[in-house]
Image (cartoon, rainbow, N blue to C red; front, side):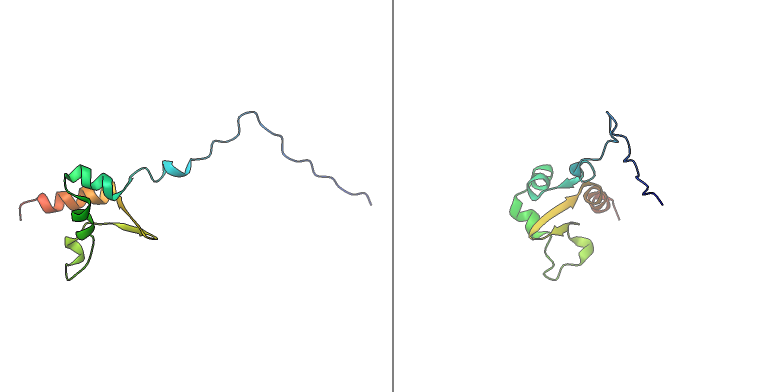
Length: 87
């Protein structure tokens, strides 16, 4: 009984390209980004992410990542389109 030796896969000159971490999160905006886009202060943006008796549908859609707040650009656009439509 001999010992079988498995060969390791060949090393290619051009390995398969892996996505960079920020390529999939390119649509996340910071508080500063949103404030600049809406031409409002950062405090206004923070205030409109808090609940304080405001229905969730009236707050800016956001994501909490630890202590940081981020905004999905598509969700923000949909929120603004909904708010700007005549009822």
